Image (cartoon, rainbow over all chains, first blue to last red; front, side):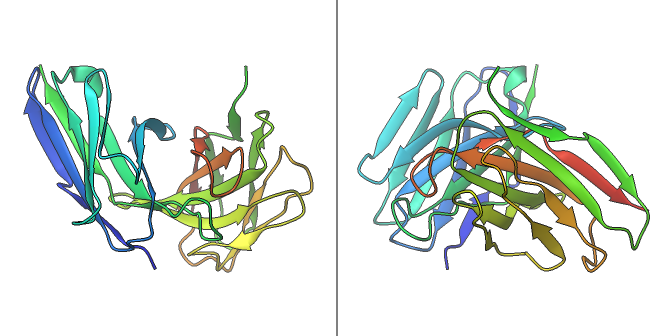
Length: 114
Length: 113
């Protein structure tokens, strides 16, 4: 089955710097890759996602890149702010089939220091 | 407001007791999911339901049970057979199984004493 590895497990940056979180997946059939942000004591919220027919997607300060050949995808946050501090999860799934469950990475705790 | 609600936020139970966690959605979504989250771990799938009166086991279903009698409700029962039930439980829903993003509720933190 699918396995998703996420690195690093913790990341500390200064306000204004960029942050990059990387994930690899094992099943080449996976075609949907969302990123979730989870604040303390709350449920995860989708912040951006990408499908396998696209190599990059941006939304203001957030971008995601996908390399299907290498089976890895990354989250990029530019001009980080203290409110970006949270745990970020990547996930992978095979959408459109019988095995459409999301497989999550173990998360990255991002701390943005003012 | 549309969304997913989970109640209660915090739940305490004595060892050996069954406990049911509530999950309700008014998004008219067909699919619903239950995940377990432990510190430093990702989300692990317990059960999912593609449609009313249907549900399937996820990766860690042992010691848990669910029902899906109504489209908007997907309660999870943590039974006494679950060896390590203390965790943060998250419910999610999506318009269709396997086609759309999942929307998460606020979670229930269960502590078994």
